[in-house]
Length: 111
Image (cartoon, rainbow, N blue to C red; front, top):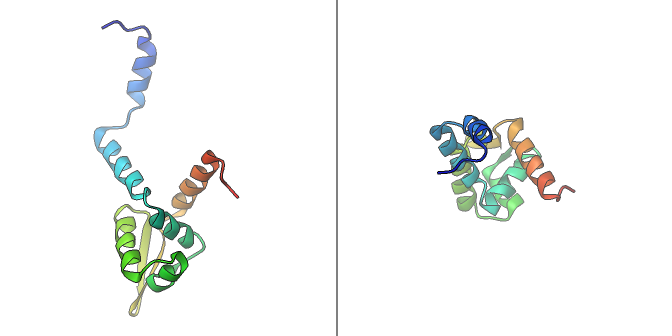
């Protein structure tokens, strides 16, 4: 095989994360591919909400929102806390909101 730019290839290879990190990143981004999950994340960007309030906010059934929240929690995008019988959800940390904001800026749709 003919290689024209070995130094650039070496630099590119050095920047690649390990395979397990790439798989985690892939899973992370897969979670973000659903519009309802994105709506949930944006709603939580305004503050903590319970599943019932989220279902009204994103116009989806409680069952659907619960399913999406489980995936978002598994993907470390949201966290929960229990207060009596009610579970409240919030963005896992400030990075989640930043990722959403940067994605919108990148796409030129920030309003």
